[in-house]
Amino acid sequence: MKLYTLSAKPYQEEDELLLEDLLEQNHIVLYNDDVNTFDWVIECLVQICKHDLVQAEQCAHIIHFNGKCSIKEGSYTQLEPICTALLDRGLSAVIE
Image (cartoon, rainbow, N blue to C red; front, side, top):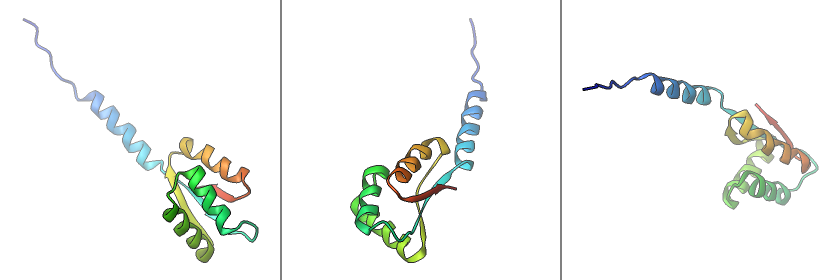
């Protein structure tokens, strides 16, 4: 009769990967400018970042009054195409 033992190693590796993902969280920060309108910023946030209308409006007001707002978080790989799309639409965004 063969006995099988369970190894904790796969779980440890998975936990380490999850921890790395958490530690490597980045943010897209959208900056205020004198060119883009509220409506355009809101439209971009809804279309590109998949914000609902209320969230997009709140972000637009935060950007207007504070000069910037963190609009999305995730890994760099996830955020890069989103940030590029925002830049392509004339918005001022960076990944931090």
